[in-house]
Length: 499
Image (tube, rainbow, N blue to C red; front, side):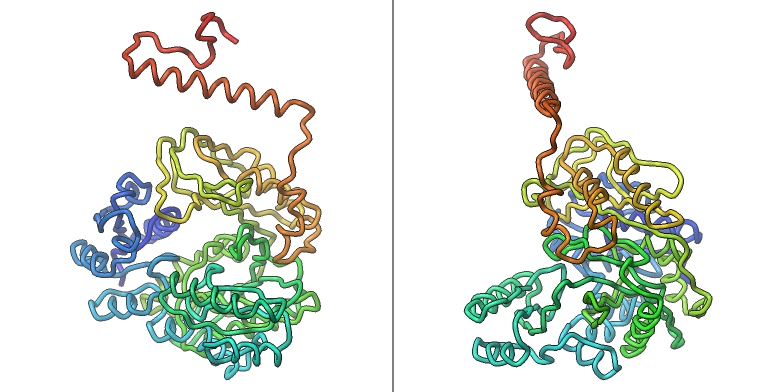
């Protein structure tokens, strides 16, 4: 039985995994880069080991150093979280060779489903619907042109390796094919070290819907229903909810059955996600499989009542799944908002810096998975997501209202965050109606990014903020010059009177 787990990750997901381990009586080991020496997951773990400089290539992606830390700590198992090495077949294989349990699928399944071209072939063989397109890599313009004329425009050119929206190009005109092919291959090579791309038909008005699956080492597999992930920016998810407002019970059951078939087709074990693209007529197609825990897994946990991290550990221990498909039900509605340290008004530019103040929302049906604290400096080296805000309620309308309330209570100063932007999403009619797709942000940009009508109040706030910033800077200068009486931010430095 697993008694000690090293979490090969950082941030909120490392913290979240350790919480479940603690509830199971399992000791935890943190690893950290030089930039994360004071991070929350390091403070929370039972043991912590440095693994290198701040850049992830020299720390969180360094297999040798992570294995070395696991040996020093005598860890029985490694949980990779998501990102970094979570879908690295070589890492899973190395753990096995070292006698360390990898809490996730075996290397063969990771390789088979990590390459999108191979995954498409596997799904076709398993009878799972796939988007019309190629099952071989495309290497030159003439080949691409011939294929696209057969499929018909518009199409997507997509990287076979990796994900996160990288190595993807939408082509609507034949004259754009050559540049799109070149751009997709170049970006894929830079991001994943592999320039293989393939072509598939672009689905108009697409909905991004994924199914959570669990599979044990005894051939049992179930799905834990779907998550609607169509609110995206730059092909990356921003808001997720479950159940999907689009699906009917009949389509949900069909898609769930295909998700389970997909997992069994690659002899999968652990937690994974089968992603589908769905059109307005509820035609659905396999998109890809994520062979790991997903960022948005908490909303499934809340609606289904299953701790996915605990189940992953139980599966790694060799236990059979404790439930059958017919025993799993959806209860109520859950929504997750990803909180990023970024500026939506500047094309979502990352906003690293020091957290001056944070007030986390509380109350019935509110869950907060975060890792920052007052005084913590967000590093520039990693993804700018700083927390996930999850709410649950008895129905969708109540869940949206609860999320709006929670976002209003959520206060962070010192860095720009996506909180105001997420609050606008909750207000948008297209979101509230449930009639939205992956073009939601683009189609509602005027509402989401428009300047607020505040009748002069915004100007006053801006003036006050500028004045406070000025006095703050003046105070810092005076402290540097060893002035005994620093200026209060609430006083005029010339008149020494409160404003």
